[in-house]
Image (cartoon, rainbow, N blue to C red; front, top):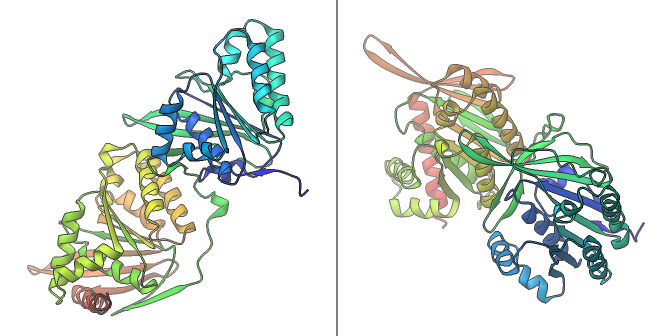
Amino acid sequence: MSDVRKFVVGIAGLDKLLGEITAPYTLLIGGHPGAGKTTFATAICYANALQGRKCLYMTFYENKEKLFKFMKRLGFDLESLERKGLYSFVNLPQTLDVEMVVSEISRLVAEGYEIIVIDSITALLEPIKGDAAKRAWLLNYFYQLQNLVNGLVILIAELPFGEERLGLGSVEFVADGVVLLKHRVEDGFLTRLVEVRKARGSPIHIAETYFTMAEGIGVRVFAPPLLEEIPPEKEETLIYDVPGWFLRLRRGYVVNFFHPPEPELGIDFLIHSIAVTLRMREDAKLLVISYTRPASVLRRAVKRRLAKFGLSEEKVDKLLDKHVTIVALNPYAHSLTQLVARELTIIEQHKPDTVFFWGTHIPRATYNYALWLKELFNELMYLKSKGIIVVRSGPCINKQACDAEASLSDVVVKYVRTFKGGVMDVKFYMYERFKGLTGVVPASGIDEFTRRCAEALKAYIEKL
C-alpha cells in the first residue's frame, strides 16, 4: 500500500466532493466554452506539482504565453514550475490523422509524468465521429491511458452552449470522476456552476454548486455543509452580561439584530461586535460586509459614536485599521449565487473571527424568497462550520423573511419602539435559542453596554 500514489485536488471545496484520488485515476472535465475547464485542470496540476509530481499539459488550442500570463494572475506560477522541471506545456498538432496524434501523446507520456492533461479530447473525437470503429479504439485508448501513466489523467471535453450532456460515449462511464462546468444566467447575471456527476469512492450528496475564479486566489468551489453534517457546537463559551439579560455566546453563533428603518441605528451593535470580537483574542478580526453604506461612512459613524465616550478619532482609526475590514457590496449588481460566492470569497481572504452583515434588509428583499432562504441557510452553516460568529443587522421590512431568518439564529435582538401619551419608549427584546425571551432592556441599558464596550476598546487601544 505504500506504493499507492495519491493526488490532491487543489481546489478548495472540490476536494470534498470528489473524495480521495488514488492512481490510476481518470478525471473528465467537461463544460461550455470559457467555463473554466483549463483553469480547473491547471489548478489540479499546479497543486500536485508543488508536491513534486510532474505534470504534462497537452493542448490543441491554448497559447502558452497567454495561458501562463492568465494563470499567474490567478496565483498559479507555471513558469516557475516549468523551470524546476515539474510542468511541461506541449502544443499537439491539429491534424485529421488521429493515430499520429495518439502516437505523439504516447511518446510524451513515456517521459515519466504522473499527471497528464489532454485539452481537449473533443478535438480528437470530432474528426472521427462518423467512424464507429476508430472512435471506439480512441475511447479505449483514453481508458488505458491511466494505467500507462499509473497516475492521474485529466481529460477536457467541450460542451456546446445550451447543452448539459457530454455525449462522449463510454469515456464517461470509464472515468473515475466526471465534473461539468456550466454557465447560467440568474437575475440577468452570468453565474458559474460546477456539477459533480461522478466520483469514484465518494457518495455525491451535492451534485451542483457554484464556484468563482479570482485574481491571486485561483478557483474556489463552494460546497456547503450537508444537512446531515450540520456542524457541532464549539466548546469555547464567551459570557456577556447586559443589564437584565444574561447571554452565552459561542464561536459559530448567528446573531440577528432587527431595528426600524432609520439610518445608522445599528452602529451601537457594530461597536458591541468589535468589543466582543476582541474578547476572543487580542489579534482577532472582524469583517463587515455592508449592503447599504461604503466603508468610509461606517468608519466615520463608529468614530463619531466612540468620540462621545472619550475616544479620539486617531486612536479609533488605529483600532479599525488593525482589527476591522469593511467591504461594501451592491446586491443589485449580482445574482444571488454570485453574491454569496463573492461574500464567501471575501471571507476566505480575510479569515475573520466575526462577520457583521450590515443592511441585511436589502438582499432579503432583492431575491426570490425561497432561493434566498436556501442560500442563506447554506452560507450560515458554512460559516458555522468555520467557528465564525455571524452578526446580521438591518430593518425588518418583510415579516415573513425576518421570521425565517430569526429561526436560523442562535440569538435575536429586536428594537421595539412604542408611543404612549405622546412619549416614545424604546426597548430591546432579547431572545436566545431554546429559551425564548431572556430579557427586555431599555435604551439606557444598551447605552450603558455601549459605554462599557467603549471603555474596553479604549483600554485595548492604549496597548497599541
